[in-house]
Image (cartoon, rainbow, N blue to C red; front, side):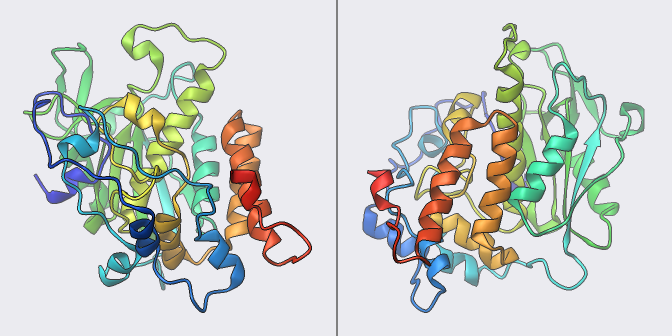
Length: 331
């Protein structure tokens, strides 16, 4: 398998005993160094890339969590700058979402909401949703998972078809589906698989609804499915921009091994990864946060909306010396 197989949201159930070297959470100094020097930046950007207590340091992993089973070197901001990743320039400036198969409204996230959140998260890049590709037109190897009894598609087949059809103006394209996925015969399943060097990725929402494990839906289920879906979508798209797994803070770019671990990671980026994304697409941090806050507030993501509201206030306070810098709110 390509090394990029490890730049995705995965749960490897056939080797739970594999252990990485003991992970030691980075110190405050290491986290600050990972952000890089902010000298010379606009004051608003300096505040946006600073941690005044808003962000939680990376936690020690549980026995089956990602960092307990994968030795991650981490990627600082300057590592990112030196990585040579191709950034959205010239003609390749658009993000595409490609839905595949049936999207049952009782189980699947709303596709238009996925598009709207992607557009807010990666503002100001344009986002386009392609027409749904019917199951019958998906020429990918399939199998029935012996554990779940449900159909799965082989991800390398999907990815190959995607990069052959990548639009000329696409910086990256992600396929989304409600069909379960697997990357190799030896794997039980995979949530997503991204090939950063080809700028394509695919991921499945099949296991995000509680019905997958036989649980009943309730009033909070649609919000839960939406939160999980936009989280993995933006995580995988982050890999398209060359952003590696984060080991510095609790962050949307944390690697995760299972759904329970994924549920503990935040939706937004830490200062290190936020600065990487800014280098890639040069957003106005306040405008980006405003768009995300509006989406969160309108779609039941109340905790996220309140967190972003405080971030906006803290960043804006930098330009108004009569206001507090926002630090007290985080203590």
